[in-house]
Length: 89
Image (cartoon, rainbow, N blue to C red; front, side):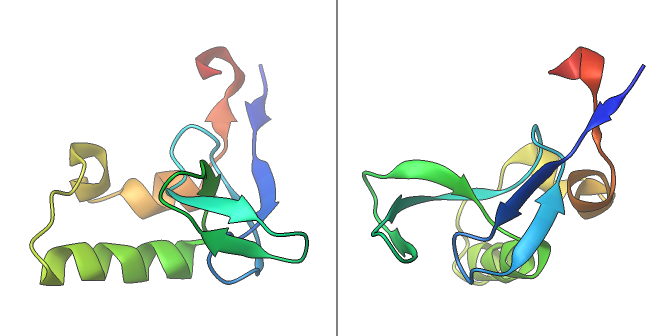
């Protein structure tokens, strides 16, 4: 049995990051040849933990709907510090 980690450049800030591919937060963005830019019609691209935490703070502040999985106490631990079980992929 194994696990999988997604290694990526954050679509929001460009920082190198890793996350559970089934739990990582993402934003709609498009690659412009040099960096990702926000694009409501773009494909969902992963974001790093610090950017995900900032996004969650914005959702809380603006009283936007938050997915139930993100409201779980251990979400960030599971999403950014544990790999996905290969059977779950």
